[in-house]
Image 1 (spheres, rainbow, N blue to C red):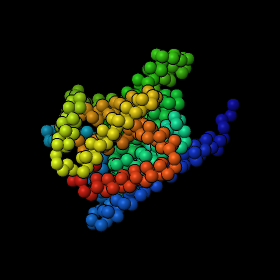
Image 2 (cartoon, rainbow, N blue to C red; image 1 turned 90 degrees about the vertical axis):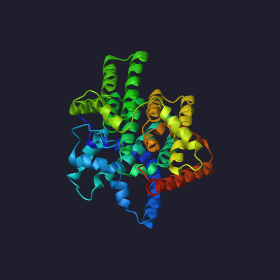
Image 3 (cartoon, rainbow, N blue to C red; image 1 turned 135 degrees about the vertical axis):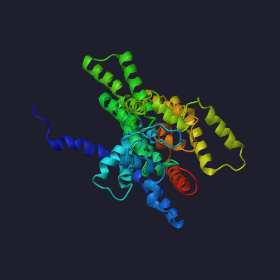
Image 4 (cartoon, one colour; image 1 turned 120 degrees about the vertical axis):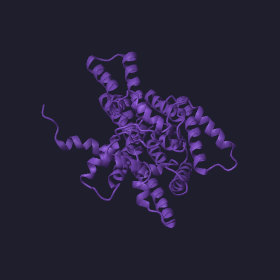
Length: 383
């Protein structure tokens, strides 16, 4: 049989893009609004918008890794070893810099913005598959209206990681196991929390085989997806071990960054300390509200009987983020990829009256714009 013409293969993709276009437009609207508010605010304070979005804080770490590579030794300095940063984003920056070497940070920012739309599309696909088009559009808009959503259009890894996560979860939901494993492996090369996605994909695949059984050909694909998923995260951890000449090299690096798992004791102490302060910092209170809200949304997601891979991913991500005794302030950012937590809100808004839905979305967009500006212009630290 002759293969279908190229146009025939492209037609379903064009149709899928048209189907997702309301979500992408809604996402673009809330992010453009938030970015415009930030830019005007920064200009009023005589701050460099380009530097803040493309070169500041973790952006600079990734740019330096792309230019100079990774450290060869562990060292003893706190918060200084670049082996804590996973390699996929720097590799994309290095590849893109061949085409566009200037201005500095342009490739990293371009990757982030492009991936944010791929993420919004993947988020829409998951929502559409589970709850229908209206809820899926709202889900993408809500993800773009989170308090720290400005990070999605910075030279950070959250957009890349969320795009890989969303499409990996969609692949699991639709039975595309090889794609799911491959995307999870790439996510494992992007952020440390890629281990949560890898575990969700692998465990779901193995449970699928155990519960239902499959034909031989399908079973091979499911098993391949389960085996592929953790390879990205594991390969980087093993590579760091070889580079440093010790099996626990990666974990030794994380210890220098004060990222150790203590079951949530450190997080609880920080929250209690913040609540006991008479005038706690606004950004830290926003982070605390995000963490507590995420826990509540996870309970709602479980009560709503979300599909297992979504619950596994968000549950494991929450366990990692809340269970670490590392730095507290970036934890709202760490939860940006946990978009399935927003599904109960999106489903409720899809059933609500139009004026209620519009009011909630406007309030979310305004809050996101305000906190985004505060995060980069008033808070004295990285996002």
